[in-house]
Image (cartoon, rainbow, N blue to C red; front, side, top):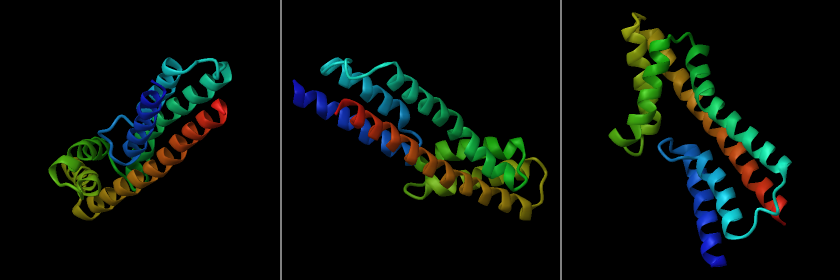
Length: 159
């Protein structure tokens, strides 16, 4: 049973890290669930209130940052709400419509279309689309760092 527990925990951590790059995967939620799976299979005795406060704060920061950093990239280069929405829609649809490049092209095209629908000239729309890609890459870096921190904290806490 121990082996099964570790397989599930590690699989959830791997899915979580993949979710930092591929937005359709649950990301931080999978890692957080892995913490509970460890408790269910082994013991919750390794955890204390500070463990849960730290992990939950990271979870909340990641939820906020996931949207905010991407929107920041669009807004930084003068994007409208329409381009933020377009970028978000492109981020969700892109990987399915244009694998494997849809992760980059989707938000770019979404922001570009959103900004053009808002009435901006093509030059500005392209600039905003590039901002969405900048925001996406920034968001990925933040997610990787914080999700790795969650996993490292977990292993430090249990050992």
